[in-house]
Length: 138
Length: 138
Image (cartoon, rainbow over all chains, first blue to last red; front, side):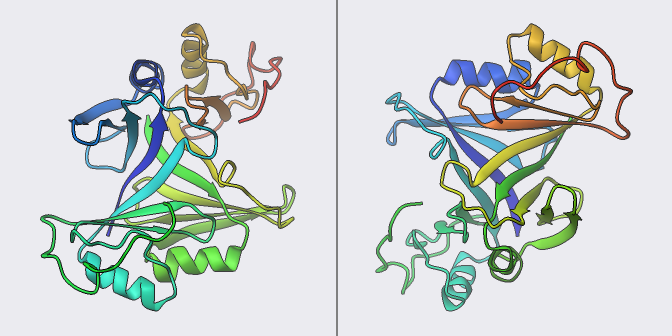
C-alpha cells in the first residue's frame, strides 16, 4: 500500500499553477489533459516518488466552496478486490465499487473521500463488483 | 522543502483510529497529546519518512462539516522567514506570520490552508514578523 496523493480542486488553473510552482515552490512532476472528461490533472511534489499534491482542473470553470475544494486522499493497493472485500466485511461502504478493476472510492468516518487505485494494470472485471452500483457521492 | 502531511479533523477518535489503522491499513507512526491546547495529533503513513496523514482530534468533541474536516497541507522549509518574505513580496498574504520563528499559515488561490514549518529548531524571533498580526482564518 502506498499513499499516492492528496487531491484538491482548482478553479483558476493559471493562478493555481503559479501559486504551487512559482510561489510555494513545488515541482510540477507531470500533467495530463482528459479530453473526454473535460478536465486536467497536475501533480506537484517536493521529492520524486513521494506522495504528491494533485490539482484537478475542470474545464467548465465551475466554482468550489470550502466543502468541495478538497477532493480526496489516494492510496495504491496491491489487490483492489481484496481490499474492497475486506473493507466491506468490516462495514465500510464501497461507494464507488471497482467495476473496472482499477479504482474505488470510500469515505472515512469524517466524510473524507478516499480513493483506492489498483497497482499496475487493472484487474480483469469480476463479480460482485461489476454488478455493484455506486452509492452516494465521494 | 519537504511535503510533511495532509491534516484532517476527526470527531470520533476511536472510530477514526480504527478506520485508518485497522480498516484502511495505514501505520500509526506516532501521536502526541497537547494538554494545554486540549487536542491530540495522530500521524499515519504507508512508509516511514514519507508524507503523512495527520489526524487532529479536539477534546471538546466539536463537530465538523465537509468544509472543516479537511485542515491543511504542511511543508517543511529551510528558512521560514525567507519563504514568508518571498511569498509576501509575491502578493501572498501571510495569514499567520511566523512570530515564533517556527510556524506560518497561508492559503492557496482555492482557499486551501497551507502550513509552513521551520526545519529543525525555531529561528530567533525577528521583525517584521514579531509585530505582525494574524489575518483572517486558516
